[in-house]
Image (tube, rainbow, N blue to C red; front, top):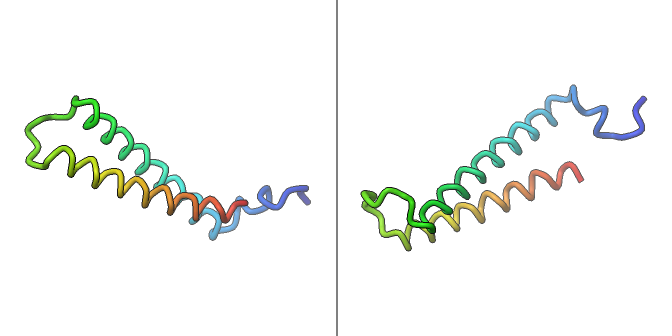
Length: 78
């Protein structure tokens, strides 16, 4: 028997589902952060039809939503 609860949860499908969701959210967060950084630095292709300010606002909103979901998912492990 393990001393820590989480050491015994590796085989539980519920925790694998949570872990997969956390990894997906982390990847999405990273992609959004990179895209936002590119647009803010002006390196993004200027051929996009969107207004850069509107695109930045949309990305920040999505990033905030992903961060909230990530915090909620991670709270299951605390």
